[in-house]
Every structure is written in C-alpha cells, then in structure tokens.
Length: 126
Image 1 (spheres, rainbow, N blue to C red):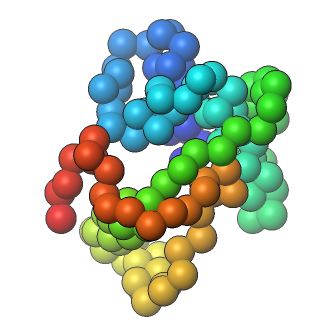
Image 2: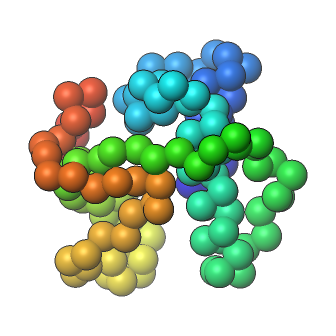
C-alpha cells in the first residue's frame, strides 16, 4: 500500500505518465487539495507500519496543512475487501485464510464510512 500510494501521489503531482486514470485516484482528485489528502492517507499508512514493525522512509511523507477526510460507502469498502481476498487467494493463501472470515473491515482512519453503494467510478471485476 505504501508504494502504491507514493505512486498515486506522483500521478496527482503530474510527475509520471502511468496510472493517470486509475479509478481509486478519483477519491483524491475530487478533494479541494488532493495532495494534502493523499499525504493524510500516507501518514496513516506510515503510523500503522510502525505498529507492524516495518521501516518505511518517513522522509517520503508529504506536508499536510490540515488533516483530510474522505467519505467512503459501505458497499465500496466491501467490494474492495472482496477484491483483495481474490488477489490473496492466488498470491498468498496463508494471508487469505487469515482474512477470509473477517466481518468488520478496518479502514484507513481518514475514511468516513457512510451507507451507500459501490462507487460509479469503480471497475467491477467480481
């Protein structure tokens, strides 16, 4: 997640040619300050990484003027979790077995969860 989010920030900063139309970027693009919002997201990933014993480079965290939030729908989160499980089932069966029966999905603290359907911008593959 760390590397993917750093790449997403480069896309938002127009510093790369790839992934410019990735649907997940829409969350950030619709914010008044997408860079500050993605930096808020990165900070939460960084803090979680410390709890898990990872050593991500703190110098890659961007500056934020104000902590941002992003509204996400319950069905979108469920969809993303199912998509993750599909990937894990093929790439990391042990992790898949650990997560497959989870009922309450933990989300990034900048997300504000609301009732709602899968986002219109999502590319549904299930």
